[in-house]
Structures are given as structure tokens and as C-alpha cells.
Length: 269
Image (cartoon, rainbow, N blue to C red; front, side):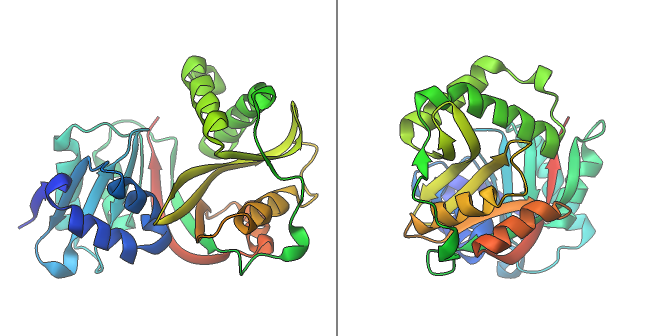
């Protein structure tokens, strides 16, 4: 029988599983250390303990367990996620649980695929790729970064740009510009490529939203941007990418990152 408890009461378990999950747990580890503990822990015994963490941007991350769950237990976890009524739109975690969650969702998801996790640190990057002109995005880059975000979400996640709330998007971009978590190559207002630091903390740094504008691809800009960003940090850096996105994976590997793990991703329509 599956037992569950609020993550706020099982923060120790959550942190332990996040650390054990390495790059898959970086985001959750940093969030729990900040006191962001919306979600629940589950399990029958120590071998099949897990955590479902619900983030503020509609992201659900499922950590653990260390063993392959039988279908009935995976389905019980999916049922508990639905009964929690906690909001989410994109979920990542073990395939057996994500697939059980998909089976319970109405309609056709935008994305249901495997993701590959990559990890790197300043000692692994290709030093020849490091660019001295790496910079944090500025206010003058705002429109260009919004355009990049819309195009990336359309290409990678099949999100129709017409359905994106522009006010929310501009607020998000403004916030990242203000706190310095968007890094770019290119002149002000003429950004060639960009990435976001989606999470920064003791658990590591998570890179998100790597994008190079059409017409500039094939020049190694993404590899240079990622390598330069990692070299500028003093922590392990992780990211995840669609298994079939060969060009992006080659770019990360050229930058000095290595494949570490995989998971399943589900994005609702």
C-alpha cells in the first residue's frame, strides 16, 4: 500500500533524494533549501521512496525511487498527483510514473518524450570555446529575448506563440534581466544566442532555454555560450534536452558536458 505525506513534513527525505538524483534533483534541492516545499513524499519502504515537487511555474518534478515501481504503485502515485489538485503543466520523472500520469490525462499532450540530462563544471569545459564577450542580458535586449523564447518554445515544445500570455512573458524576461540570470552573446539589442539560469543554489546550477537565432546556427555559438557560462561559475551545472535533439546534444558535448541520466517528460496541451 502506498503511503504519502506532505513534503513540508518530509523535507529531509526530499533533500536526500534530490542530492542522490544529481542533475535531476538540482532544481528541487535548491527549492527545498529556500523553503519551497509544495508537494508530497510517497513510498511503502525505504527502497521505493519518492517525492513529487510542484514548482511555482507549473513544473512537477518526480524524484526516486531507486527501484522500478510496479505498474499498480506507479498508477497510485499518478492518482495521488491528480487528487492533490496542485497545479502543473509539465512533469518530469521516472518513465513508469510519467506514463501512468499520461494515461490519466484527458486529451493529447503537446510533448511526451525522453529527456537526456547533461552535467559539467569549470574543469570539464573546452577552454578554447570560452568567449570574453559573454554578458548578462540588458534592458535593450528585452524584445530580442522575448522573440527567442517564443521561437524556442514553439520549436521544442510545440507551444503556439499566439497562445502565450505576453504580459507574463515580458514580466518573466524583465525579472531575469534584473537578477542577471539570462546570459547572452551578441550586441545589445542584437543578441545572437541566449540561455537562462533556471535555478542557482547549493544543489548546482540548472541551465534552461538555450537558443540560437536562425541564420546564425552551425557556427558553434551555443557551445561557446554554454562553455563560457559554465567556466564563469564555480559549481556543477546541469541541463536536460530532448533525446532526439541531436544538434543541441552535440553542442553541449562540444562544450564539455557529459550525459549522466535520462527521464521522461510530459507537457500538457
